[in-house]
Image (cartoon, rainbow, N blue to C red; front, side, top):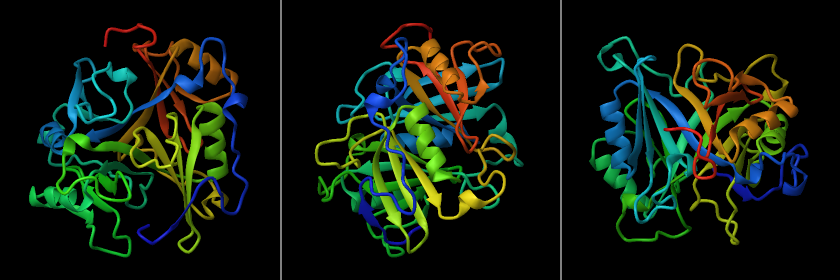
Length: 340
C-alpha cells in the first residue's frame, strides 16, 4: 500500500461510482444529513496512561473522560482543540476528528491482553488514523526522538511524502502534510489536524452508495492506484475548500478498496468487535437523534442497537455493508438532550 499513486478527483476506476447530489439525498423534516458530523473513531487500548500520553504528545487534548463503572470501562476522548485548531472550545458532540480511547479496566495488568491493529491477517479491516502536520520532516523527527516507533519512516519506500507512526497498541497513525509545502521551519503539534480514519471495504460501489445515500456524506476525493490494484475514496460532511485540498480538514473517512474483493464469498474484513478486538466504531453526531434513526429505518439501514435497546437510550449503532459499527449520537449544540 506504499506504492506511488496518481491523484484524481471524482474520477472512478473500473465502475461508475454513484455520486449522489446533496439535493437528492433523503432526509426528513426532523433530520438533515447536511448537519451531521463525523465525530470520532473508537479504539480499544491496553494501558490508557500510555495511550493518552501518546496522543497528547501528538498535540491532542483530553476533551472529556467518561467512567462507566457498571461496564467496567473508561472512555477518553482526545482531539485538537487549542488556538491553532479547527475545533475550538465547543461541546465534544459538535466536534469532528476525535479519537475515543476505550479502556476495559484491568487490561493494563493482564499480560495476555492485546488488541489487533487491523493490519495483520486474518484480522485486517480498520487501517489507520491520519494526522496532517505543518512540517512533516520536523514532526517525524520529533516523534522518533521521543522513542516512538514507525511502521514506515518518511525515508522508506517510494512514497517519501507520508509516514506511519505506531501508537502504544500498534495502531497505525499516518502522517501527511497539511499543505503542498511545509508551513513552518519547525513543528507545532497544536496546529495538527486529525484528518481521516481509514477502513477497508469489500465492495466499493456498495459502500459508496451507503455512505452517500444513507449516511449523507459527500465523496470529496478519489485516488486510483491501478498498478497496485486498489483505490482510495475520501468522504466528508464538511465543505471542501475552493482549492479542492482536503489535507487541512478534519473528519474525513477514507475507504480503501482492493480490486476483486467484491467477488469473494462472505465477509472479507474484520470489524474489530468480534474476538480478537481492536477498532470499535466510527461515530456521527446528528441534528436530531430520533429523527436520524427514523430516517435510517426508512432507508432500511441495519441496526446493531436501536435507541430503545439496552440501558443507554441516548446512542444507537448502525452497520455499514462490511459490518463496521457506526455510533449515532445527538449533537448537543443543536439540541440539548443528554447530560454527558
